[in-house]
Image (cartoon, rainbow, N blue to C red; front, side, top):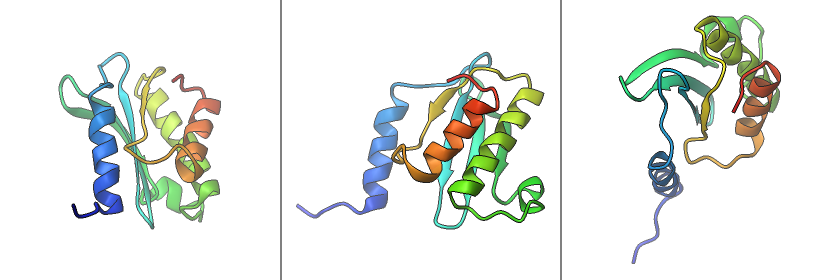
Length: 120
């Protein structure tokens, strides 16, 4: 049997995780996606299929701080995402790491969002 690529393995983990969690309008899903260059965060209501708020390392608010997409930048992005979520009326979220390991940039983003006041 052929071995699966790292991307296919991550997608399999994400599908397994998504069977267990979903977001509602009261408690949306905080979905995190990382690439080699950028980090993306979305607050998603899975009942209606709409994104309530989002932030990424491509957003102007992040870029004007002249940060990179490393762990320090992920921490700042977590604070920015939490602020956007609070302005949209979100206090509690379900954290979806997207099949990525809870380490490095994902962990830094999650901890910064918690410190900024999001509960998950």
